[in-house]
Each structure stands twice: as C-alpha cells, then as structure tokens.
Amino acid sequence: SKWEESPKEKEGSIPLFRIIRKGLSKFFDVSPNVLNGKGKFDNLHHYTLTPLKEALNKNQGIEVYFTRKANGENAQVSYSKEFNSWIAASKNVSIMIRKEDDLNKYSGQRYEYAIEIGRIWLKLINELEEKFPGRIQQIKNVM
Image 1: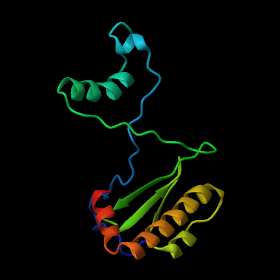
Image 2 (image 1 turned 90 degrees about the vertical axis):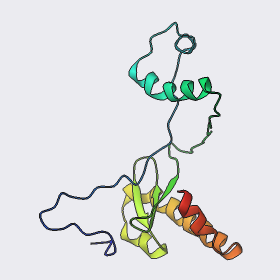
Image 3 (image 1 turned 60 degrees about the vertical axis):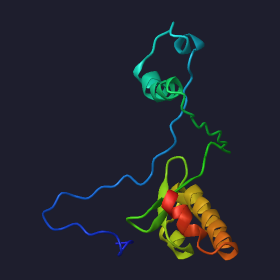
Image 4 (image 1 turned 180 degrees about the vertical axis):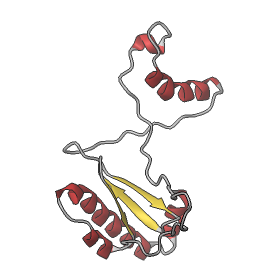
C-alpha cells in the first residue's frame, strides 16, 4: 500500500470510505425568469438556489467565490486530517501527498496536472512555514 499510515480495515468489516474532496457549489445558467419566480425551477436550480434564497430571506450574508481556470483545468487543494495528507486535484484527478517524494508515486499523463498542482502547493506551504512557523497547522484546521 502507498499509505502505510492510513487507517486499516478490520477483517470482515464494512470497508471504510471518506469523502476527502468536495468542490465548491456552483451557479449554473439560470434564466432571470427563474429568479423572478416566473420560469421553471428544476431540481438543479432548487439545489443551487434554495440555500441562497433562505440565507437572504433571513438577512444572512452569503459568500460568492470567483475562480479562474486555464486550459480547462483548475486547482483544488484540501486536507484530510484522517490521512494526514494534502489532496491536490485537477478537474478530474486527485492525489494524496504529504511531502515532495509522494509526487513520485504517481506517473502518467493522467496525473500530470494534479502532480504540478501538488508540487506548487508544497512549495507554497513550505515557504509559508519558513516565514510564519505554525501557520500550516492553522490552515489544516480550517480545511
């Protein structure tokens, strides 16, 4: 196994699964008629817009993130406390990493973008740790 420190499954037990990557909720193409209550409000719009409408009706704030991606790819990074690993991801591929050497566990064109994202992330957090010791733990705690 690549991850010796990962939790082990007990013989005869139900396999252990964890969601370790979840993207941001997205806005889809929404007709102004739907927003004004005059158009069809399908399940996709309901899932996307209902929490926003509820927050606004309660005078609560909402956060909207504008993201950019080049060449059809985007970079996502999360942290798994259970596996003590960073999850570096492109649009369709995720890898688990703790240190630079872990990047060598992945090969092939499929992992190309995720490896590059992981390499850049590890460089950034190493630089951050040098400048602000202890800050990485704070980042892990919120991720």
